[in-house]
Amino acid sequence: MKLTFKILICLSLLLVSCTNDENTEVIPVNPKSVTNCELTIEPDTLVSICANGTDFALRNEIITFASTFYSKNDSPADSEFFWTIESGNMEIINIENSHDGFMAKSIVTVKFNFDFSGNGIIQVHASSGNSEAFTELFVELEQI
Image 1 (cartoon, rainbow, N blue to C red):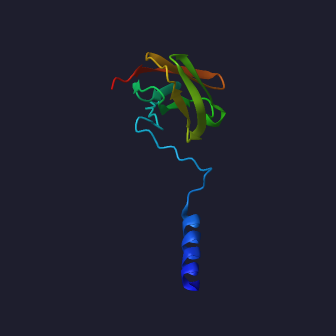
Image 2 (spheres, rainbow, N blue to C red; image 1 turned 90 degrees about the vertical axis):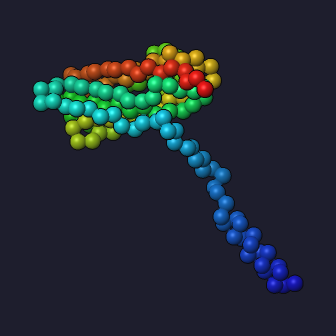
């Protein structure tokens, strides 16, 4: 009887130690999400911006979009990004900015709301010192 009791206690401890922390939420990465936008900089380029992301989204979907900004006369560490929803029922839930070498980068996470009907426009505006640029992304409702 004592042996059975000890085995049960060991199994209970093993099960408890292997369970996931209830406060940890794992959000799967959406295959439509991007985290990079490639800019080709020519020697005479003063300011340039790009934005990258999907063209189609479903209702209630969460997707990341990326932007890269270059300003020849300004430090990328001084760059600021401003993401706005110009149209479409979606919301910005997170923005992460960084700089790498001579370019500034930004990743925005967007939630497409339950009543997203398509024709959404996401605008990104970047500035550093006296330089600024903007571009837009157009997202339509994905038909399934």
